[in-house]
Length: 341
Image 1 (cartoon, rainbow, N blue to C red):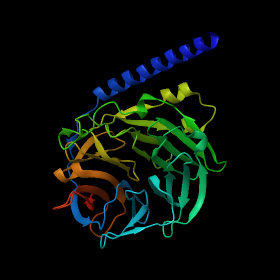
Image 2 (image 1 turned 90 degrees about the horizontal axis):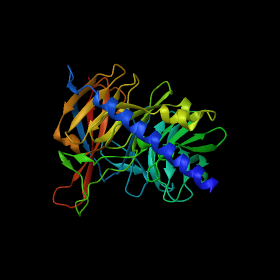
Image 3 (image 1 turned 60 degrees about the horizontal axis):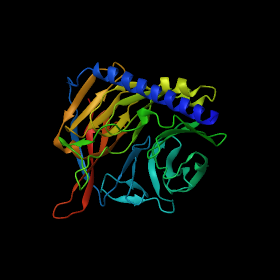
Image 4 (image 1 turned 120 degrees about the vertical axis):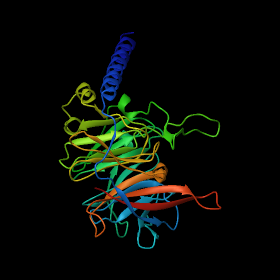
């Protein structure tokens, strides 16, 4: 009886904290400033049809070399000159992919999931970090950021953060079931709700997008339908911080429309693509919400990645678009390059 009372008490506390988080988020979102047209707009530079479809997890090395995953979870290097894809063979299927100064990182599927680091040129695995101790039945990790000391992951079907101390190879599962990690509204694309074949609304899943500021002090994350949250990395890397302190630190940062991609620049400006209206949006440290570009093609966005400057633009963003191929039921993927103001 005492055990049941304790569990019931914890359940009530959890529900109370979750309700407080949602109410706080709603108040903050209600006060958001509306998106306004930027004084200088972004512009389409070029379009690169790809030789075969890719599914998402678009990421770029500091050099600007792009990678994505195909439908089998195989990493593909994307050559923008001819649109060819070059697979990194020999790797197990991955659920998500990211790049940093050390190379490429990905998370494997299945009950014995691992975080892998591997060489961008050959796919040779440099290190493995087992996730079995922090995985639940059906776990699938959908978002990933990695620094020199830590990796930050989000479990989509069983919403929770996982943080790995890379030196000690110690993973911890945190903030299980926090409301900020779950989607609460239908996904919208091109002015309509996205539905299943029987008309059931789709949410697009739970947390899919996560980026980190360049001080490595803040994580920004959200579900495809928002809102955008901010969380201090110190709250999840310090084992002495309590779950209540972690929950209180999840700040509702900005209400967003349905998104097809999220990226962050060196000056910590957040870029996102609104797939409901077809807009490229920017939200900087000044918290002024700007609409950089409107184009119906952007409603087909699957993911985005920032690129270094080139002769055509000081700053660029790569947008992975997926459309129905002409005279075919199959999908066609291409990369649009957009010059940023």
